[in-house]
Length: 141
Image 1 (tube, rainbow, N blue to C red):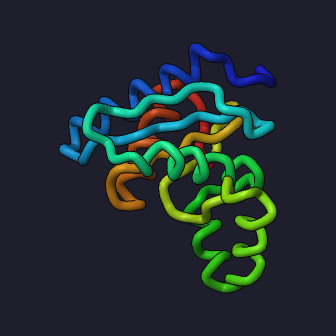
Image 2: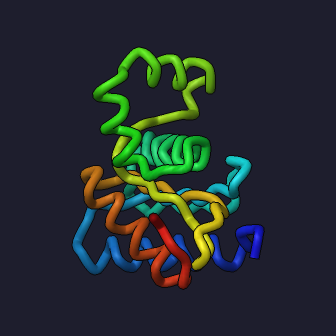
């Protein structure tokens, strides 16, 4: 497997949203991008605010661009804010270093894409992304 299938992307989203509802989180938006940063699948729950879509996508886009979780990106941004402001500017705002997105990897570790969520806290967003990736039988580390 060297490409993220549409079926896998849709399953990740469906299972992430189930995890969110089971946990009682606010309405979410979840975006899955492939390894080139192209949107593969997306869902926005009823009641999710208007910014959720763009935030979920920007989190996922940043992860696939840097190859690490958005939690790691947020930590790096705290240490080097000028670099991360520059990344956001050069990507026309598509890059967001905020907790709530994880890489999607094959069981062998090959990067396939990323999933980002927005609607809860960064920790909640990250938890639902991890749940979706796990349910698809893929790695998020």
